[in-house]
Image (spheres, rainbow, N blue to C red):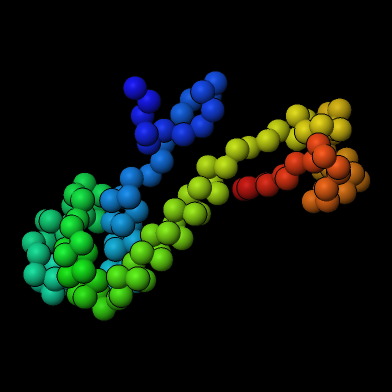
Length: 138
């Protein structure tokens, strides 16, 4: 049986998609910290236990919609904001996991001789049907 959380071509090791509960937890923790609030403060306002909130923030517990609404109320944010932030984080993560293309594998480049040769060929412009986009990351 194929792991539904794994992605990628069958000839490569599968990449794991982030669990939704982990992304929710990351956004909740980030929001709480941006507000300079403690776990105890937010848990008390949401009427949930501090250990449970900690587990939710660490992605160990899958919070119900009622619990998420209570945490959002305690943080003074809309559920729509939480969902938008989660969606944004998922898009950023997807972009990070995008396929990496070796420059020497791009059609039309015999070898990579340095950045000058790429710049001379007009990096960033399309070169016909075999063109590829090159993303460089530090």
